[in-house]
Image 1 (cartoon, rainbow, N blue to C red):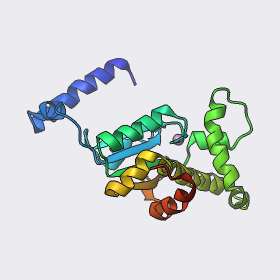
Image 2: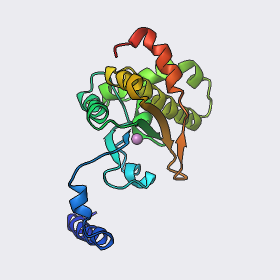
Image 3: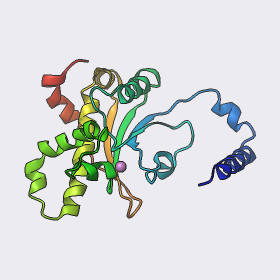
Image 4: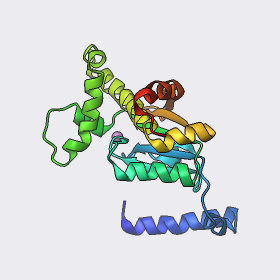
Length: 208
Ligand code: CO
């Protein structure tokens, strides 16, 4: 994609928006009121808003390699805190995707420098589920299940935060785990039982 093209596209987009609603940007500049926080992968093919058909202002987005929510990641945790405490989103979604390069890299035994500590989070998910994963002989299938288990684990990390625990009690904030399938374009809801999980983990992780 050429830089020049980007600015030409931008001018086109402005014209299209104004044609439908001449006050479009006046309204947009007045503020945001999204219901949803989306935490997804940085992968260029998994376009958060586009695959959901969401318009500007509808979704608060955080993306990083392999949609992780490490407990010492100031960026992800700040996004969660702001989305919940200020924007008061009703839903938090962690969305992974099959064919995730980050998850695949974590399945290989290679030194990847700075990526090592980041991908360690995924290796930890593997270690937690290694009985189940090692029993899957088809490597592709094992890769897919690790993507799903990683999404679930990151949802649990979301539930471990004081911000989310307080918002769950106060107004029933919901947490969801999704997977995007690049082969079909389908968004799959893993139907993670976040209320049951929260009940269970609160015995140890209750801080809010
Ligand atoms: Co990815």
